[in-house]
Image (cartoon, rainbow, N blue to C red; front, side, top):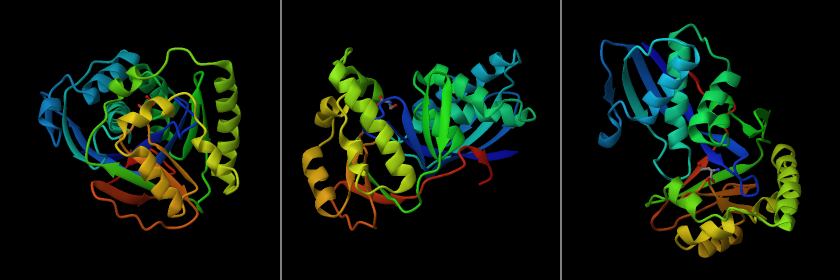
Length: 278
Ligand code: HSE
C-alpha cells in the first residue's frame, strides 16, 4: 500500500497569471495499490469512475513510459476544497502521475511529472507547486522554485460557493495591451522578491494585475468589500486565489477575520510538494 499526499496550491498570486503558484499545508491524501480492476473511494460520486483526472493523469504517465496501465484501488481523503481556486484538479492530476511513478520505483523525475501534468492542466502554475512545494515560477518548460519568507502570514478566504476555472477563463480577453503586459512583468518580478525577502513596502504590488483580476472580480461576491475589510484589518495584499472563488490575503501578522459565509484559514507554505506519508 502506497500512502502519499499532495498540497493545495494558490495560482497566479495576482500579477503572475498562469506562471506563479504557491503550495499550502492543506492536503489531498491518497492510498493506492495495484488491483485487478479500478476501485475508488472518497471521490465525489460523479468522479468515482475511470474518466476522472486521477486516472487520466495516471494513464498519461504510463503512456509516457510506454507502460501498461495496471488498474489501481484508490482511496482519497480530500481536504482541498473543490472548485475554490486551491488546485483541487491539480491534486488529482499530480496524484495520478505520482501513483504511477512511486508504484514503479520512482521512475519519473519531478521535471517529467511537471511536463505530463502541464500537458493535462494546460498551464503549470498549480501543478508546479503541487509537485515541488514552495513558490514556483513556471513557464517555457522551466520551473524556478523559491523559498517564501516564513515571516509572511497567508490567509485563505474560502467562500461557500464554487467558481469553475473553465468559466473564469471565459471572461478573460484574448489579447492584452502592451502597457498592461509591461506593468505585469515588472510587478511580478518585484512581487517575487517581496515574497522571498519579506519586503513589506513592495508586497502590495502583487495586487496590480491587469490581465485577469479586473475581469474576474465580478465572479467573487463582495470582492471590493472583502478586500477593503482585509486591508483595514492589516493585510498588505488581497487577491483572488487561482481563478477563485477563494481569495488570499498576505500580512505581516495574524488577522482576526470573521465573515459570514467565509471560512477564513491561516495557512503555512508547504515547502516540499507531493510526497510519501500520511
Ligand atoms: N492560472 C489559472 C487561471 C489557475 O487563473 O485560470 C486556475 O487553474
